Image 1 (cartoon, rainbow, N blue to C red):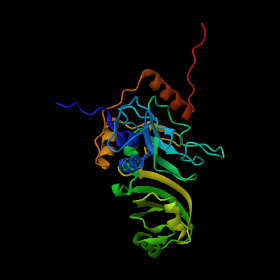
Image 2 (spheres, helix red, strand yellow):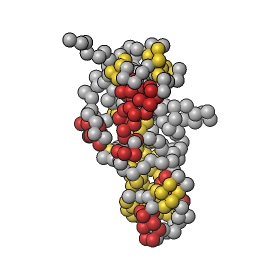
Image 3 (cartoon, rainbow, N blue to C red):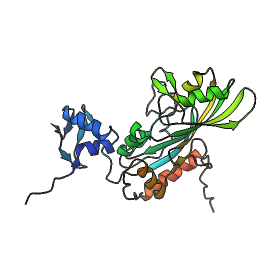
Image 4 (cartoon, one colour):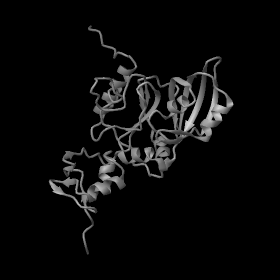
Length: 281
């Protein structure tokens, strides 16, 4: 009788850590770019949570086994979707709570001047699946446009417009009201290419003056969630999110009291609420 393999497959651990998808990590391992405890790894190798894993010489922060946590964030204007910015601008990660093990991974990006729904997860494999084109998850935006809009123009954007990086199109356009040169529209599309919504309108000589993402797949931006605020997704909704990409949600994560206190403190800060202090007797 042989012993069962120890640990998990390297590609799974790296995917959960947010380095890339499992298929991408298989190629990286096969290319000899991954080391475990100082030794070059091979495809099929396994590792434990305490092993030191590096990719291209950079140590990977391995996520805890229970990695299924998701945050819903209402991004304001003036924040970038990167962890660090050479220009010193605010990033979407500045307001997020700290996690004991692992890190928050952004599901896609929103432009500097785009607001609205942005998802974060500690599960890199989930993030990669949600962002992959094969998942065919639609995104919905509310946009205010400046310019003359007619039915022929809307139909062209539904049929498809050739942009610099290929054909792009909206899967749905709904009139959101407005009069004169400023009008509102709800638009949906299946991809998340850079500035795709703005570029589609610009191809018709129409400028987008306001842009807000209101939905990602089945996840809607909560009406009570103000800009700059976040909330943790409950387990039931998180299970539905995993189902969207044919994955099984892990067991609910137990948040330690200190971490919960830190999260509540950051929530109060984001909402501008000061913790009451006791008066002296």
